[in-house]
Image 1 (cartoon, helix red, strand yellow):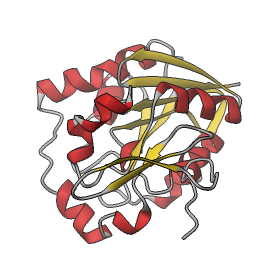
Image 2 (cartoon, helix red, strand yellow):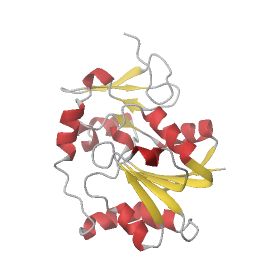
Image 3 (cartoon, one colour):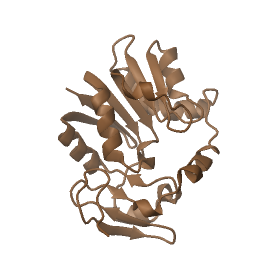
Image 4 (cartoon, one colour):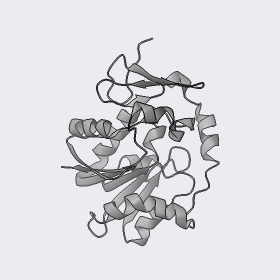
Length: 212
């Protein structure tokens, strides 16, 4: 079976790690670590996992967590900038924080807010918090988001990053069966260069890209 990297589509990635449930491959081109598609959950099983999430705008701890992306990104935006929270989940919260700060924001989620019209609009900024690790086709999805950004626009992502093979083996993040794509700083730098974006790492799980 010919394997391809789901981010850059390079062939023949190497086996990176194996546990009792899944295999993890690493791409030699972009360094993405990923679970092969035949080991992904079905859409129904994936949604059942997300249905257990208890996030809401009333949760101050969750707001504090999202603040690690919200604060550095909001500081870069012009007043009234228009954004999209992509993969907002069952309890949209980041969008509420942006609205409270005077920004105009739409939401999209394949399961909970499938507003396809929002995928055809142009935005000043797009956020995706704890989303990219769930993507079976991260290259396609991320490239589409860049296409939606206006010149000078920002893409802000939150996801925990791969640091080393040794740490990966013990990493709690890989135990979530909905997590299938694992990015490192090197992967994000590679992708930014391919897309012609500037990249800034503002926290150990936050990255902000800027479109020229």
